[in-house]
Image (cartoon, rainbow over all chains, first blue to last red; front, side, top):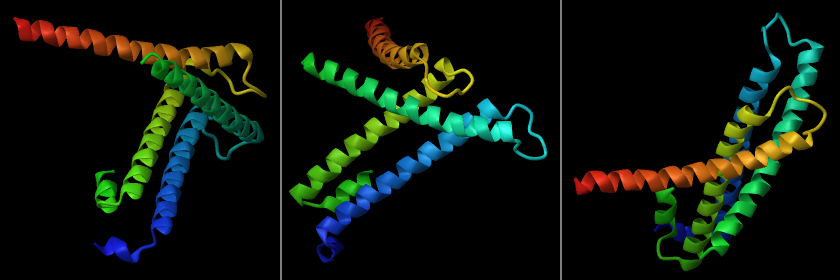
Length: 84
Length: 86
């Protein structure tokens, strides 16, 4: 296989990096969708300053929410695993 | 990700690495999904911080969603069995 020519460590790094990029893209896409929905009620001719402020708060809260959910899910996974 | 597994060939270390990365990616995808669902349920107007009621809502949302999923899976299996039995 062509694999033999590629350094294994390099391949692993590439895989990790691609997964990280995919993750960031998913986060960005969801964040944009959710914060647009929350902050832009009636699209005007530009993003006014209150909309911009709302968007930056929304982004921070989105990350808070993501982190909290990640912790909660992690705890649940541990609880479920300890049942077996 | 099946092409990943082909990539590993018979290399044990690589197989294991890919399995773990795949699991991590699945957990991550699940977190994205929960966050999408629970954000809609729990978040009002974005403010300076998540208040404790919102935090409680978010973590309850995750646990109840999982409970719902388990319950429906169980019931659905019963429904299928009943149908097969008929």
